[in-house]
Image (cartoon, rainbow, N blue to C red; front, side, top):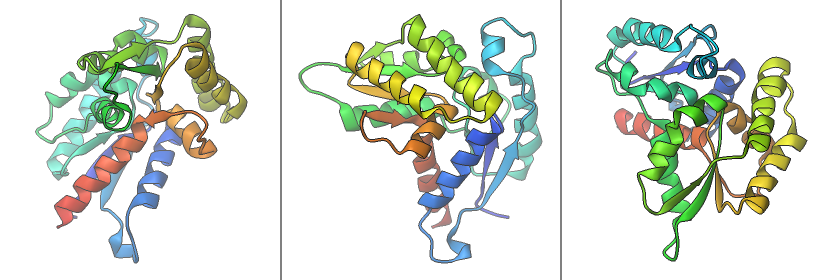
Amino acid sequence: MKNFFAILGGMGTLATEAFVQLLNERTPNHSDQDYLNYLLINHATVPDRTAFILGKSNENPATKLKEDLIQYTPLQPNFFVLTCNTAHHFYDELTSVTSVPILHMPRLAVKAILAKFGRDDRPVRVGVLATEGTIQSKVYEKELLAHQEIDVVIPPMEIQTQVTNLIYRDIKENNFLNEELYFSILEKMIKEHACDVLLLGCTELSLMEEVTKQTLYPVVDAQSELVDETIRLALEARD
């Protein structure tokens, strides 16, 4: 197979399924041959990224991810797609073991925020919704603060606990898409913390956005931006 890309997923599996479904839905097609060529690596047993970053586990997920990159690089995909937001904490380490480009989801999301919500009169206030690991490692905060046009709003502990419960307790552990909790989190960040837009920096939150298809609150879904860039690059390579 030529002109294909590799999706490094499984973190978690439901979120990876949502990514692939969205990828296929958005790909312009009129026949089987119009869909994209890709390899899906659903590595579900990669150790928990947040647990390692927070010091609650000694199992370094980067070890397994680097093994995957080393294993699949010889197949010569055009690029790798890393669907886990928190795994971008290890991005520089991962790029060191492969000559194949790895798309950077946080940078794509920040680019979309500036394009869609940038203001001339004042910085845009961006609320970051993500796992505790992503928040603690500042994966998104670093990318956002690189731009003077952005003010970053990190959720207070009360809301972060709700985000964690939604991601882990509800979705990962019980396969329960808790729409009521999701909408409550969005509302609090917009109304109580004066956010102009919310950055969804976790694939489980992306799953919630795709399922609810809500339009009440302004969001930039990092996974959605990654899907669009993946399609753009794949179609470009096909031409």
